[in-house]
Amino acid sequence: MNIILLGPPGAGKGTQAERLVAERGMVQLSTGDMLRAAVAAQSGVGKRAKAIIGRGDLVSDEVVIEIISDRLDQPDAKAGVILDGFPRTVAQAEALDKLLSDKGMSLDAVIQLDVDDEALVGRILKRAADTGGARTDDNEETLRKRLGVYHEQTAPIIPYYQGRGALKSIDGMADMDAVSSEISAILDGGAA
Ligand code: ADP
Image 1: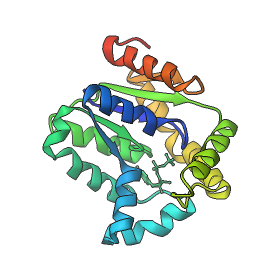
Image 2: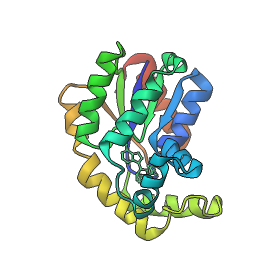
Image 3: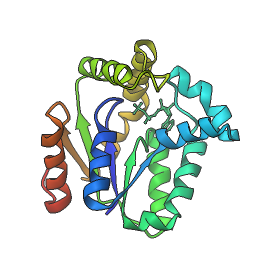
Image 4: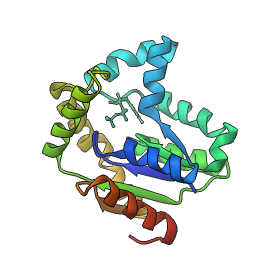
C-alpha cells in the first residue's frame, strides 16, 4: 500500500508516518529529511538546496522528483511507502502519477491532515524549542513563509486528488492517537 500524507508544516505528517513505519513496516519517504541529509553531506544537491530551504522556498520540482524516483527504485519501497512532504506542487503530483505507473506501483490513499495555521505556528515553535533549534527553518519568519508557500503552491494539489476521489481529509487538530486511529481506519477499511 502506497499513501501520501498531505498537510502544511507542523500538521503532524512526520509523527504519523513514524507510527505507520513502526506498526506496519511501511517505509517513510520524507523529501524534507532527504534534502536535509543532502545538505549535511554537502552534496551538489545539498549545496544548491541549503539556501532555498533556509528561506522557506521550495526546491525545484526536477530535483525532488529525481530524488523520489531513485528512492522508489530501492527494494524496500516494495513494502509500501508513505510519501511525506511530496508531492508539494501540481507538477510534482503529475510527475508522481507517471513515476508510479512507469514503476508498476499504485497510489492507495491521499490523506490530508486538516489543521489551523495559527495552531501550527505554536506547534512548530515548540518543536524548535524542544529540539534545541535543530532545524534552522523552524523560526517564526521562515515558518510563516512556508505556510504561505503551502497555501499557494501545495494546496492546489487537494482538488487534483479530490477530483479522482482519492482524497481523505481528517482532523489534524485532534490528539495524535485520534489522528492515528483515523488513518488506520482509512488504511484498513477505506473509511473516510
Ligand atoms: P515541513 O513540512 O515542516 O515544511 P519538510 O521537512 O517537509 O518540512 O520540508 C522542509 C523544506 O524542504 C521545505 O520548506 C522545502 O524547502 C524543502 N522541500 C521538502 N520537500 C519538498 C518538495 N517536495 N518540493 C520542494 N521542496 C521541498
